[in-house]
Image 1: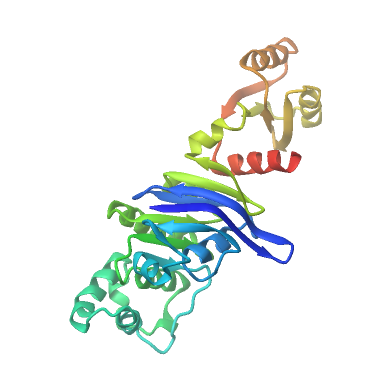
Image 2: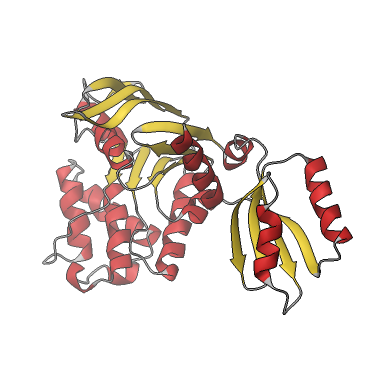
Length: 311
């Protein structure tokens, strides 16, 4: 559905994107992960035909975003990270304006608008002015606007930005419904655990380059077997001594002390992990638990970007 080949965007000597290659299959939710300035919004702007690349090409459903932008716009719905709403319009008038802009007949808009408002849980705000809506409601209204022409592809740049926990849950539920409707969704977010829940695949971008691509499980496997381990000690034990014990082990890194618990990364083999645990038992250390933590998307992102920085 989306194919990106050698996409590059250069400003003077600075590369916002540098030879980006990526293929996104139809009907999946793809999460774009990266720090501010990594190249996410630049990629989205090019895919949305709002920005011309310096080099490379991108296709949506086989149509070039640079050669046939008008045809691409019929296929996509773009929700930027910062969007404008017209405060003097009511919610239904706002959607009617955009429906008219897409050439949707008035009779069809009259039927479509209530359906979209119901989808984004705003039916009860149909006759409310936009300026009295909460931020979360405005986000959902903008999403409804993005869907007005029934696009095959949704490009959503930080759709949950600035939302409170309840509003984020509502947005996540709506995106799940859109996936069930067969939409291909490209989404970026700083809320990494939520991306892991929603996405079939993720791509990690850093300094304009794609450094990892696949499911969360596949990307975890790329961290060379690195494990995250938590050790809990009996109350009152000197945690400075506990930390010193792990600092002496060559396979341990990123040690963090939280109350009576120590968390660290371990990049040794299973045998080395057994040796570590055996040594702790032989020293009769007051251990309450020793367990391997499941890596979440934040752990994966930090580990991969740290590896890139070392290169």
